[in-house]
Length: 570
Image (cartoon, rainbow, N blue to C red; front, side, top):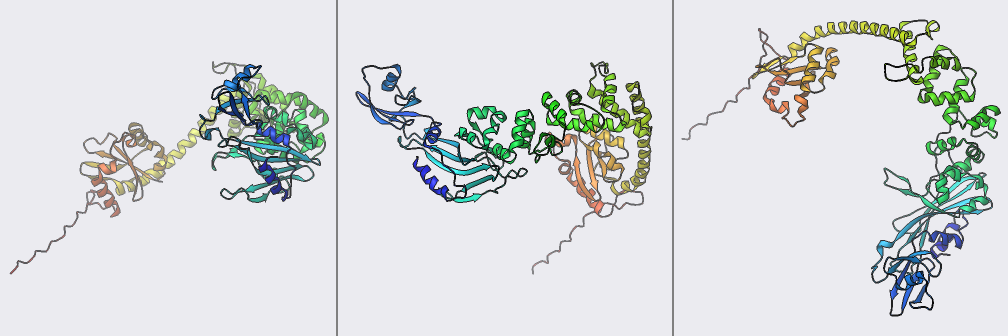
C-alpha cells in the first residue's frame, strides 16, 4: 500500500466510522487515472527508462535481436512521442529528462471516491491524489478529506477533516447520523469555484462493484445518470446514495416503474411532492394514494409528476380516467391550472368543459391561423370575468353558443363602465387639483433674469413636456394632479411656449431638474447652467414666497457690509 495511505489508514482508525480501506488493486486502478510517462536518458547503445505506469527503473538496449514497431519507438522515440510501455502495455508519453526541465507543468491532481464495504454497509472514501514529477520516481501522494457510511438501519454518516494552514493532520468533524432530506446536510465531497459561486466538482469512482455486495445493489444509479455510471465520473453519487439510503424501497420502485421524475425532483430541487406521494408508505397503493388500476395506467402512460397532480385535481371535479388527464395535460400544457379554475367557476365536469372548449378550437382567429385550446380558455376566462364584473348570473350565461360574440359584447360593456368610473374619478380629482393649483401657483410661480418658472396646469401639459423633451415626466402626471408632488416648467421669457427645463418639487425641497433627454448627451445640468436663477428662486421660497400688491415676487437684495474708514495717521 502507498505510504501516504498507510498513514491515512492509521489516522482514520481512531474515528467512529473506521472505514475499510481500498485494496492494492483498487489503489493501482486509481493511480492509472493519471497520465503515464516514460522518462528516458540516452547513452550510446542503451536508454535508461523510468516508467510511471508500472514503476520500473531499468536499462533498455537499443539494439535487440527482434524488434517490433513499439520497441523501435521505445529505443529511438523522441521527446513527447506516444508509445506503449514494453513492460505493462499501457499507453505512455516519452519524455526526455534533459529536455523536460523541472517538469512542473506535468503535475496532476485527481479527485477519487473509493467505494468499500463491510458487513452490508457501504463506505465511500473521498481522496485527492497528487502526482508531481520533480523527482521522476516520486510516488502518488494521497490525502483523504472525508469518509461516508451508508446503511438504511444506521442512516448516513459523514466524517470530514478540517485543515489548518498547510499541516496535513487536522481535526475530525462529524455530520448528524440521520440524513435530513430537507436540509440535505450530506453533500458531495469536492467543490469548485469561489465562495459566492460554489459548485460540486466531479470525481472518479473506484471500486464501484463493491456496492453490489451491500443494500445499494439495486440503487439504480445507472438509470439515474447513465453516462456517469458508465464512465465512473460524476459529482452526484454521494447525494444520490444519501437519498437512496433514506428511502431505498421508494427510490428503487420509482426508477423501475417509470416514475423517475419524483427522484429527479427530490434530488435536484428538494421537492418531495408530499401532496402526491407518501414517502413513508410501504405499498404502492399507500405511496401514490391511488388504486391499483390507476397506478397501472400511470405506469403504462409514463405519466409525469405534474400529470399525476393534474389528474388528482381533475378527479375532485368529476369522473375522469388517467388517459383523459394525460391527453388534456399534453394539449393545454401550462394552461392546466386555468382549465381547473374554469371548471370550478362554472361548476362543470372536466369532460363537459373540455367538449365545450373543443367546439371553438380550429376556428380562424383574426386571420392569424387556427385557434388552439389554450387561446379558447383565455377567451372563456375573460368572458366569465366580464360577466362577474357586470353582475350576471354565471349559471345562466357560463357557456354561450357564440363565445366570441358574447365575449366581445361583455368586455365592451365592462370597458364602457370602467371608462365612466375613471372619468368620474378624474373629474373629482381635477376639482381638488384646481383648488390646490392656485395655492401652488402663489407658492412657486417666479420670474427673474429673463426666465420664468410656473406650475403645470394640466395632465396634458405634463405628457407633452415629457414627449418633447424625451424624458419620463409623464409618469409623474397623476401624482401632480393628486398633489403628492409638484411639476413645474422653466422657460425663457422670449419663448414661453416651448419646453425647456422640467422641475420636480416636494414642499420647499428641489428634487430634480432636467432638460432634453436628462442631459444624456453630456449637456450642462440646468441647476449649474442657471445657478443664479435657482438660488434666487429657492431663497425666495424659503423666505415664504412673498409678493407685492401687484402679485410680483419680492426679491430681497443682499445688504452690503459697511466698511469702516481708517483714520489718517498723524
